[in-house]
Length: 370
Image (cartoon, rainbow, N blue to C red; front, side, top):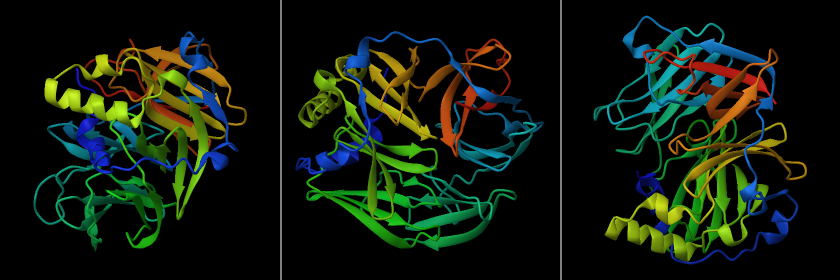
């Protein structure tokens, strides 16, 4: 079973120099998560949560049903899901209060106002629109969420990258541009105008030893052993990940990538000895860090004040970005996957393995406070 990071992250492999480690002093100011020491910790009891709400998603139209969607954003009473499969690439909107289907953004194609795939999407809560960059041409399509109508086509500068952009309209949209000299992160505002950039001379990327993605609507980037939040002109350190002998060096990363591509050896088997960071979500002083080791995944909740491990979930379904178990105020234990954190609240989708979810129905969206 392939874990399929190579398709996107291999673009980072085109940079050839190594990181200088000049951020060490800055990194020392942030909490250290001792992942190497925690590697043998067993799964902990389910998390007790507050203000738990569960909404079954429903709709009369065929378009209301989805499989394997992730939460892109929650704006007011609207939850926006992104679904990318070989057959479809779209956004789906539901009312998070009553679960009713509100519509979709689905314009896959090759013509004006159409895209091949939604590699990045950014909701603007100020006017109820979403920006979707087109990777077939230097354009960004702006759609109205409520009406599925094309509001504007924004011209964008052409940059030599196919790495998905990350971030949000409230902070900045980040585009990674690797080169032989290092890495530039070009940053844009809601109008996709260049507002700033971050340069990392000598940066060397890899397929498995780094992270480039969204935490809520924040762009986050793992450089070496440090996770940063991206804002205009600044990488703010969030946490240092102490991995010890379980760390995957750039050299080993390149060797594993080459063996997978040339010999067809199992990606999962080759990565088993290392801690591979897969997903991060954080809000209100707590960070959920999902990693893979020895062929299983761990969603670990850390206290960002002191770096202590609060909770651990262990699960074997590797494609899931994250998964935890919570105990509601009425004593129910529920499995939740595909976590999303924003403004002090956590959201997720009821696990597909839960008995309460019918095989022919959408899952339920939940929200809670830790």
